[in-house]
Image 1 (cartoon, one colour):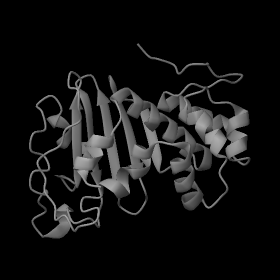
Image 2: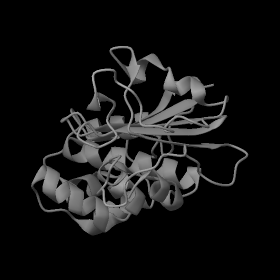
Image 3: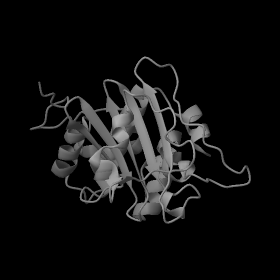
Image 4: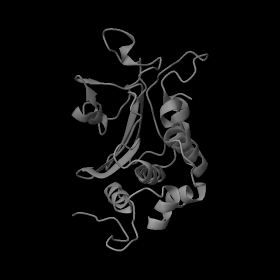
Amino acid sequence: MTVHDLIAALPEPDVLAARCRAFAVLDAVFDSGYPTYSHTAEWAPKVALAEMSNGSGDLYAIVFEPAGVFLYGFDHESEATPWRDDDREHWPGLLEGVPDSLVRWTREPAFLFAGFFDATVCAWRETDDTQWRCGPVEFDEASRDPDGADHLFGTLVAGTATAYADYARDYFECDIDVDAVATILDGRPLTAAVVAALNPDAAFTEVAKAAIAAGYPVEAAGYPAEPEVRS
């Protein structure tokens, strides 16, 4: 899969946002301190941010804002890495066509490394658009995952309870209750029972805090049934 396949497989922005929130809650159940997937509902005014970092240098960020959605990923071992030469150059066409309404995210300090926008995958969708878009990048047809799109976004694009469970089973090295995963992916309010079914050792209060920060509903004594919305 390359970015061209990725934009064909990405769901509608609201579905993607819900999936990102669910992934963040699920990861918080297994590791609230250093989750792979995270989501901050109020990262900036009117901006939500979903992130993935595997701890080995590979990552992605998805910005949800009024102008649309901006998505990028960095696979440090991919063919498209800017580190393939000393000059650190983006793969040809990677950022071509990013609309004015979203281009500022390619200059966002939080997304820069040593002053450079490290990215091997980039896609976007403006609010009034009907499809996801990317630049005119080209790769050798024989290359396998040349930009890291599959490695970075494969699980998110699949978006199923089985897909998440497969990742979590391997990453956290534990058994996974697929039905409990499905409950969270369905967006049902988080309960202590679901958290316990996934990880009996998890502290529900910590997971609930992460869920509320992600904008995910929590149903329990002392927590609102819906995430708090600040004016």
